[in-house]
Length: 213
Image (cartoon, rainbow, N blue to C red; front, top):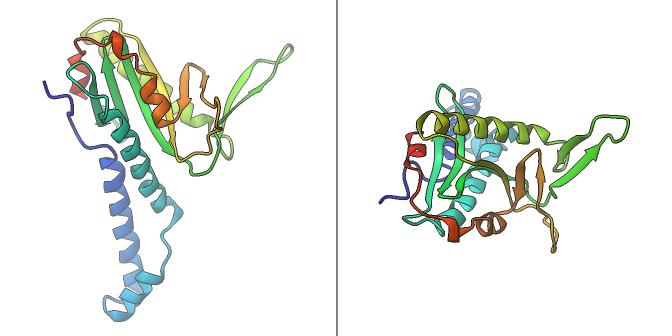
């Protein structure tokens, strides 16, 4: 049974980074020409933040993917870089076991600490926010949309299956003890913690239908 289906981890992000980098270089050469001066201008030009973000994303996905590949077997299917139907976006990683399905979104926020901030209380609605060098709660919304999509697809093909979402932060400033948490049902953790969260003793014949992504 092939447990390593689809693209390698980070393929889409790396491809988008290369596309944007080539586009940026073309703009510089439009100004300075394609000769020696143009090459010097390209070498001295800094990449735009919006371009380097894709490179960082590809690195994060590759690191998470490597940890997941280490536990892949005939009882644990690991899928990478799965295209979301009717959308340009993709799901970074899907892990399928008898215990259920995990939808994993890899993020690389170097040297920043993921934190759970709870606002509100007795007289105001409770609001949970994800803080990683700023308010990143939209990342949770994105994972929840992916979880909903996978849950809907599985419901149509194999019936109700537990689906858990996870945000896996690479190279973040995690504390020595503790650090992981759950926000609105989404697990927030790091690669080694993600792998240890898999209960391998409950894994059995995998649910193949997820590979249709």
